[in-house]
Image 1: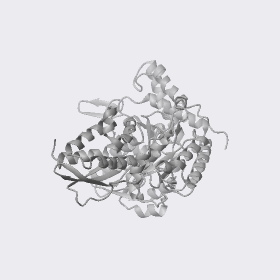
Image 2: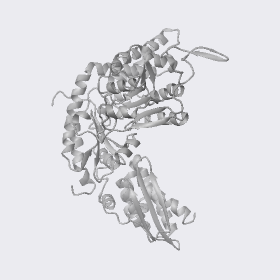
Image 3: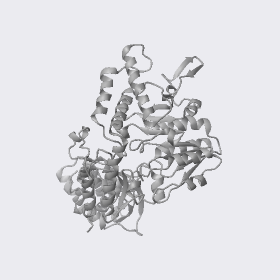
Image 4: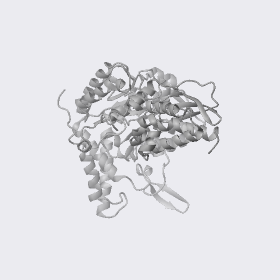
Length: 406
Length: 144
C-alpha cells in the first residue's frame, strides 16, 4: 500500500496526536479548508442573506447560493430549485414527512421502510402513519443485509405510497441497488426516498441517474460543518408540497389574513439560513471534487479490505453483514463473543482508538438480527494503514483484557 | 481513562459473579434498565428484621454494570438497611468524584470502579445496580 494520506489537512490530528479516528459514519473530521472557509464567511461576508440591499448582504447571498449550485452539480440535480438546505439528513426527512406526508398520506395507505433504516428514516414515517391511520410496513433483508428486487416487489402493494431506504446502511455498509429499486417503485406508483447520509460522502451519487424522488444527506458526515444538510426533491414534487416551517425569508407577500409563499427552494427555508455552514459545505465539496471519488474509493477500499481480512483472522470476532469486504464500504460492524460493545469501545478508547458502540440508531434492525448491540468501526479516506493496524492490535487483545484466556 | 481500567477485580466479578442467580427466598425484587445501553438487571433482596440477609441479581449488560452489581451485593449482604443506604451514598459520591480516602476504604472492592468518575458515558452503567437497590430500599425497606 502506498500514497496514503498523511492527515496534514486535518487540524484535529495535530491537536490529538496518535488519535485513531474510526467513527466516520457518525461524523467526519474537517479539513482546514472547510474551517477556513466557514470562518472567512463570518469575517468577510456576513450579513443576513437573501434580503439585504447592500454590498455585504449580496456577498452573503452569493456565498449561500453558490454553495447551493455546488451541491446541485455534486449530485447531478437538474436545477438549484431542487436543492433545499436543512440542518441535516434528519431534518430533511422530517420535512418530507411533514410536508409531503401530511398532504398525501391518507388512512389505509402504506409506507414501506427498510428494516435497516436509521431511526431518522423510520420515526418520521412511524409517526406519520400513526397520525393518518396509515400502515407502516418493513422490507426485511437477509442476515447479510441484502435486499432483493423480488423482496421489494412482494412487499409493495397498490396502497404503498412511499418507500424509504438508505443507499448505504450505517450498520451493514452495503450499497443498495437504488436505481433498480426506483424503477420497481415507480412501476408501482410509489415514491422513493433515499437516505444518502452514508453514501454521498463515499461514492459518486447522481440523482438523475438513480431516478429517486428524494435524496437526503448531512454536511457533517462529508467533511462539512455541523448544522447544514440537504434535501433534494424532484421539482414537480417540491412545487406541489406545502411549506414545512413558516416565517421570514420563505414568503412572497403577507397580509393580515393570509400569505403567499416564496418560490423554490426558499419556500422550504424559513428564517435566517445557515450561510456560514453552506459556505463550509461548499468548501467540503470542492475538497472532495479535487481528491475525486476514484481516489477516495480506492483508499477506502484498500483499508476496508485490510481491516476486514485481519478481523476475520481474530477468533471470537464476528462481523455483521456481508462475508465479502467489497460489500462493506468502510463500515465494519462487529461483536466480540463475551464482551459487551460498551466495554469494547472503552478498551479501544484506552488505546486512543475512537469507535462507536450501541445500536447505531437502528434498534429495529438489532432486534431483527437478535443482537442487543454491536460495535462499529467506520473509516474515511484520511485514515491510513497504521490506523487499521492499531485497531486490529487492540481487537486482538480485547478478550484477554476482559479476563478471558484468549 | 487508564489502560488498566478493566482490572482483575472488575473482570473477575464480571466473568465469575458471586451473586448472579435466582433467589427464591427474596422478599423484594426490582428491575433496573439502561435502555440506551441495553443493560438490564433484576435485583433480588431478602430482607429480614431490617437486615439484608441475602441478595442476588440476574440479567445482562456491560462488564461495568454487571461487576458493579455483584460487588455491591458482596458489600451489602449481612448489613442493615441504614448501612446499605450509607454505602449507596458513598458509592454515589465516588462516581461523582467527591469521595475522600477514608470513605473510599469503606467501599472496599467497589473502589475498583472509582475511575468511572472520569468516564461520563459509563456512569449510568456503574450506577445501575445501586440505583435499583435504592429503589428497593425506599419502597420495600421503608423510606428513611
